Image 1 (cartoon, one colour):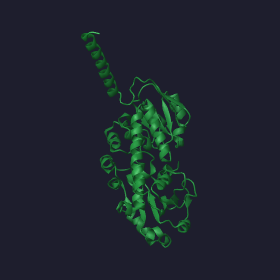
Image 2: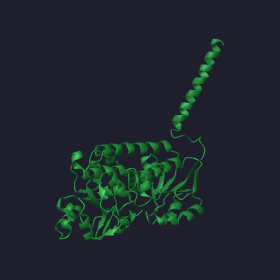
Image 3: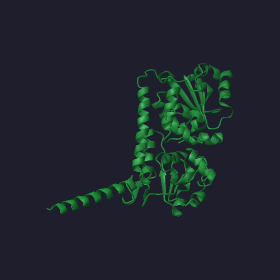
Image 4: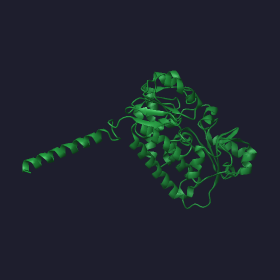
Length: 364
């Protein structure tokens, strides 16, 4: 083979290599040349996207946060009234570039249809959303039903499904890897702790509603090395003050979006109450009130659930982390987590909501 022929072959190979590199750069998550993507959603339905969807409608705050965390938040064209994280969500709502479809528990099927999305994300845990599934399908909309989950593994499944159907599977896997890395770091910090403190995680105090087993909060407690004194119950049961005295948790964490009075006053009220004041957590000043975005961190299974584990671990094991958290934590929670710099830039004021809606939001 002569010299000119060899040079020609080298040039052809080089051009092919450059072309391949350009294609990979243009399509970092698999590209639009891979053909349709098909998944089986949480309802057992077959859902297909012929190309990467660019107009997403999210009917759940958790799903909205997942979309943003994997870098496709700009594809959202409509969300619920309750979606408020990251800050870009509220900014776009105010600017009129992001529509709303109603409440999390009261979505408007007309508003969802009017948004003209090419993929609608529904939360399987909300009956009102399931009730409008057939109407949305009849309107010709492509709909995927997701189970946002109550454990890390279940949340990861939801993230992966969104990533796959939206053609950003690599980004979804990267998000899960980063969450796992943070979780592993926290668990390493508290790994040598042998005496696990007891606790109760309440979402309302009058009447008392708190976390039993099988909830998102229960999984957070487990990862933060806290022993749930109501692990023998399931879901979000209501209990009496007398029951609280019998279980007598060392820590009482109260997570409420809407506080009937300032957090400091709630704690003071417990300390001055003839019954509540008998509780060890009250006597030893181990009552913590979580509200605003801090409440959202503990009530929305999603990318920020690692923040919940980190915060609770610091509350339960202050000596390990050499930190003393305030007894009332709100949007300023970002100051106490390792993702604080990013979160602080994204932080948005949480909207207040009626007590029953907030309690209902935790019932999976």
